[in-house]
Image (cartoon, rainbow over all chains, first blue to last red; front, side, top):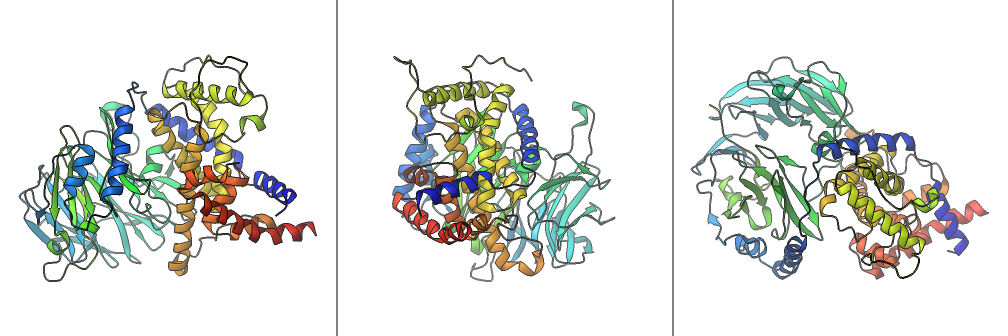
Amino acid sequence: MSRADRRELERRLREAPIADEAGAEERAWAVIRAAHEERAPVPRRPPVRGIAIAAGAAVLALAVGLSPAGAKVADFVGEVVGIGATDPEPGIGRLPAPGEILVESGDGAWIVRADGSKRRLGDYGEATWSPHGRYVAATDGRQLVALDPQGEVRWTITAPREVRDPRWSGTDVDTRIAYRSGGDLWVVAGDGIGARRLARGVARVAPAWRPPPDAKLGPAGPFHVVAYRERSGRVQAIDADTGQRVPVTAPDRAAVPPLGGWPEGTGGPVRRPGGGVAELRRGDGATVLVIRTASGAKRLSGMPPGRITGPSWSPDGRWVAVGWPDGDQWLLIRADTPRRIVAFGDISRQFDPGGGGSGPFPRISGWILPER
Amino acid sequence: MTRATLALPPGPATPAARESAQPMSAEPVSEPLVRASPAVFARRREAAVVREAQRGSEEALEELFRRHWRRAHRAAFLVVGDAAAAEDIAQESFLAAIRALDRFDRRRPFGPWLHRITVNRAIDHARARKLRAESELAEVGAAEPAGAGISDELLAAVADLTPEHRAVVVLRHLLGYTPGEIGEILGLARGTVNSRLRRALDRLRPAIESEEG
């Protein structure tokens, strides 16, 4: 290609018309400004330690990249971030924090109690806790099912098409479940009454509830706002009670997965009980767990090689659980200081007792302290 | 929120200068023995803007945003070929950059950092879209192919490239990075960047020649 051709290419790239380019800039600025206002400036701290840890992690990641699946992940993570080394326990032992873990596996939905015992709820998919852990919503083809923790069905509703991505939110007395069916977003009250379509043309990614407003902090806005992504890729937010669209906030945008879902090895920010978030990110070929709390941000580099799933917070906000399918382990990482790690191994067979554990890797759907 | 008053050197005079490509690596700023070149001056000014933004200045943040948004948005658009998706990608990339601003090393230019986030997200989006188009065509239906919003023949030819090839073309010929810098941004060897560029330009040549003819 001649120099003149390249100049022509460059000119065309610079001048390619973009629909509503100016509007996009103003919309983006409004979102960025709002996000900036939410972010309190933090005191500067010497970056040397963080950089040194990251550099060390990168070197170790190369060194341990050849570790066989099922290796002592805690040794690996521990060397990098200073966590005490622990062999993975065969099976699931006592959880390091109070609460119960809801699990999705190829064999159905399960609950793991604090003592490590398990109960299978049934052959359901995409299980999600109710806000206070009293019930579980799950899918069964075109049915949305609400169960109690013993697996008893409390109610079912049938949707026009397959139900996907149920998400349960709300207050002590008034909850809603949002879910997708076909290309539509639906909502139903927590007692299974009043299912209705909220939006059409919804992308195949999970909706996300906005946390209910705290009335003590000022005038309360709508209590049940759900954000979702349209097929066009745009994020919208809607008041589930009135069906009216409301302005999209930066946290809405951050909470809804991109088209096609979160890229491999990453996930959206997961809110920590008591404030803060945890987030998986990919950087330089490795997964990094980013934890942000009021006391600052931590980047836990040196996660084991391969795919990492999660994260989920423990109800006390002290532990972060992630899955490591290649190692067939769950890693429960102490988020504050001193950091520790608990690794549970042989996870696939734990949730497929009659089979060989060859189904999808069991995913932690949520870790909650039930209010029963 | 408190709006800090900025005490910064004056910015570049023209929009073109404001949007000039930034070098990938920058030397630590030191006091000049001679009058600084415009590039050094611009780099120093940007470091001052980033510092003020880190301290919470909305005014500085807006300057940073206005300086970099259009090129990031355009880069995302040319990689994904969809204006709405490009807006989301550029916006989310900017948000990610702002969230990480406290950890940003001011000695480095902001543009390449933002472009790294934006272009890699755009590639991920374009790949996911391609997979989705193959696996969910019947149901999704409304999903447009990349480049559906582009009518220009040459730009349509760009849109026909793979996301990886589009990205190197955009980084080289829109954002002005060298192959070595593109390799850093995309995590590729320089040779891989060069071969992708060569193949991409070979595929674009007929579109340019037919328009010239």
